[in-house]
Length: 131
Image 1: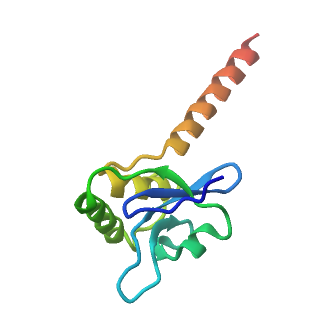
Image 2: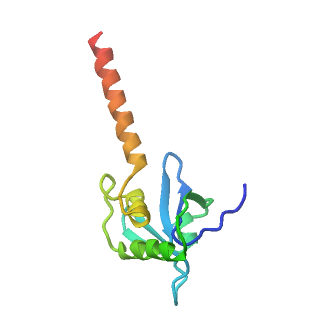
């Protein structure tokens, strides 16, 4: 596997078993070694080092930022502006925060997939019960 070097504005991820944790790489900040904005369950949106973000897991590219350095800098600024926002699994998790910073729209494909799966299971259970 090739080692991925994140670029400013990229959404990066680490696999955590049944789910992925994502964040926005914002680069080294002046006077700081912090370089990833991500939304943590018990802390909300925070700025961390790559090491703190990954916790020893491989860092992968989730979604590459588009545009030139100015567009990437705007993504980083939007991500930084989210610092302090509270975590909410259903309404504002790590995917929502990263998506909002990168695209302007807060979305969570993992939550959407979970809801679809849960609905399918419910429909199948109702259908099986009716027989």
